[in-house]
Each structure stands twice: as structure tokens, then as C-alpha cells.
Length: 240
Image 1: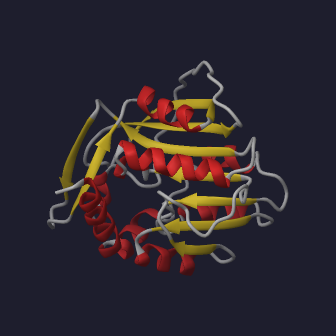
Image 2: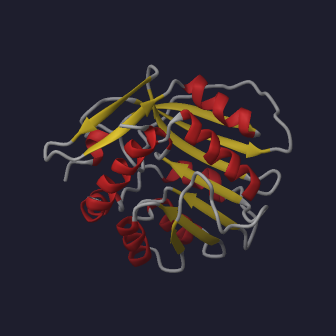
């Protein structure tokens, strides 16, 4: 199966399980401190895009914490977008591909969040996504990225009921390299344990990056923190 077919299968799986997924994960609050890092860096009345938004978990936090913000969420799974529209009053949600972000103007957003969607993109697709995002973000705009990490590998992971997604694991250095190559500066990076209820224990990475006109290398300091996940590792995602 080609990478594009694998991506399509993952989207179809999340579309099928959207209601179960939202019921299990939408109300999580223990990760709000990371969302707050983004919220406090956005200007009053600013616009923010929630990439691979799922049922709108992060969008909901941003609208509660900062009602002044214009929050736009995108996801390729139509039923995830249906969940977000029902659960996040005041948000605007579209079925859209994060790999091109068609329909959005250049410099349209003052901030972005990309929570646990990177591991479903190949390196080429991730490069496309970050390149498209850089074009839509204003200079100096923050990006909050959260993703699972692990030794470089790609494989299918399957739930007990048979649905599967294609996962790409990356090291923290590989994630940083993707961001920096696209034109982001790493401002904060923290490695944290996956949730205790995860089927597979992983180490997750939370990064706050800044969109800059040109690549600006920076030293990265890892910190210790509490478990953080909006979209947990795939095997956990697929369980009710």
C-alpha cells in the first residue's frame, strides 16, 4: 500500500470512530497548561488554526480561555468536523487537508496548534504541511506542536475491533529538524510520559515554535512534565 493510501486508511479509521473518540477524549483537562502557553502568546482578537483538530479539544480550550480569538479547525475526517462543530460554539471548522491548506490566505493566522497529528504523516507529507503552515502564519506567530516520539519506524497499529492506522515514529531531533527546515525557531521543548491508560507506553514531545522569516537555529532544553496528549498513541486512540 502506498503512503497516500495509508494516510487515507488512517483518515477513514478516525472518521469511523469519531463519536467514540470524542466521547473518550474531548473533556480531558490535564493538558491545559500547554494550551495556555499558546493562548497567552496570541494577540487580542487574533486568529488561530487548529490543524488536525479532531473533535475540537484544543479549539474548545482556546475559546474558553480566550473568547476574543477567532478559532479555525481543520481535519480530513468529516465526522470529526461534525463533532467539533457540535462541541465548540464559536469555532469555525472545515474538512481540509493539512498538507496544502487550500482556501486560506497567506499570513492569515497569528498562531497555530498541531496536536498529535504529525505521526500520521510521512516525512514528505510533514514537510508539505509545515511549508503550507509557514505561508499561512504571520512572522513571529507561535505554533504549539504535540506528538509521540520513538526510534524511527513506521507501521500499522490495530485496535481490538480491527480498525487500523499507519503510524510514523520520530525522534525529538527529527521533529525539531522538520520544524527548523520549514522556518520555525524552537522556543520550548519538553519530553513527557504518555498517559497512564495508554495501551502502549510512549514518550511524547511538546514543542512551542515560532514562525520566523528565515531558519534560526536555537539550543533546545528538555524539561520534565506531566503526561500530555490530545490524540494519544494510535492503539489507545482506537479503543472505546
